[in-house]
Image (cartoon, rainbow, N blue to C red; front, side, top):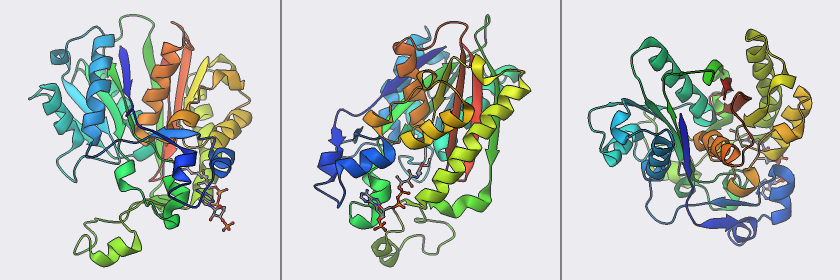
Length: 324
Ligand code: COA
C-alpha cells in the first residue's frame, strides 16, 4: 500500500575507507560495485533509522499511524540484545498496544517479514501491517585490516512497507522461502552469544568475535546458484516465465552477484534494479530501499510484475512475486 526509506546523511566513500584500512576505491568497485555507503553518526539504533521510513510508508499508504495493527521488524543489528526493535519502533511511533515482532533472517529478512504480513492479512489476524527492514552496521564493523573484506561492503539504512488487504489486481502473488543451517558458519557474528558462558570476554573481543566474519567466496557461490533457482521455482509455481517479470529487485550484496544472477536468468539487465553503488549492503533494508527508489523512478507501473529475491546468513534465501 505504501513504501518509505531513510538513510543517514553521512556519505562514506571508498576513498575515506582507504584512509582507515588497507584498501582502495579500485578494489572495492571492481569486486563489489560499491562506490559509497551511508553510516550513522554517534549513537543511533536500528529503530531510530526505521522511524522516518515507517512514517513515510504509512503516509504513502494513505493511512494514519493508528491504522497499523502489527509491526514486523527485520534486522540483524537490533538496538539492543532484547527487547526487539519492533517494540522500540512501536513506542517511537506511539502505537503502544499493537502486536510487534522481530525477524532474524538477515539479508532475507524483508522477504520473510513480508510473508508473515501477508499470512496475517490473509488469515484475518491483522489488517494493516508495517513491515520494516533496518540496519546499523557501522557501529559493529572491524575497522582494522582483519575485517576489511566485510567492513567495506556494509552500509546503514532503513526501508518500510505497509501491507494491507488488496482491493483489486495489485497483490502479493506468493513467496518461496528457504533456509539451510549447515551453512551457518560461513557468515556470522559469534559474540555475545548464549552458547558462550560468559557471553563475551575480553579475549573474544581481542579475537574480534563481536564483528561479522564471512567466507566471501562461499557466500558468493551459493548466491549465484540459489537465487536464480528460487526465482524460477516461484515463477513456475505461478505459471509465469522470466520474460514476464517487469522488474527484478535483488538484495544488494554485490553488483557482480546480481549481474551473474541476471545472466543465469537471461533477464535484460534493464529490468534489474541495483543501487549498491550508493548504499553498499544494507542487509534487511536493501530490498525495501531499492524497491522504493524503483517506484519513485517509475521503473514499475500498475499491473507490472515485480520479483524480489535475496540470500543471506543462515543461510536463508527466497523470492516474492508482486502484481503491482
Ligand atoms: N581491500 C583490498 N583487498 C582486500 C579487501 C579489501 N577491502 N578485502 C579482502 N582483500 C584481499 C584479501 O586479503 C585477498 O588478498 P590475498 O589474495 O593477498 O590473500 C584478496 O583481496 C582476495 O580476497 P577474497 O576474499 O578471495 O576476495 P573475493 O574476490 O572473494 O572478494 C568479496 C571478496 C567479499 C567482495 C566477495 O567474496 C563477495 O562479495 N562475496 C559475497 C559477499 C556477500 O554477498 N555477502 C553478503 C551476503 S548477504
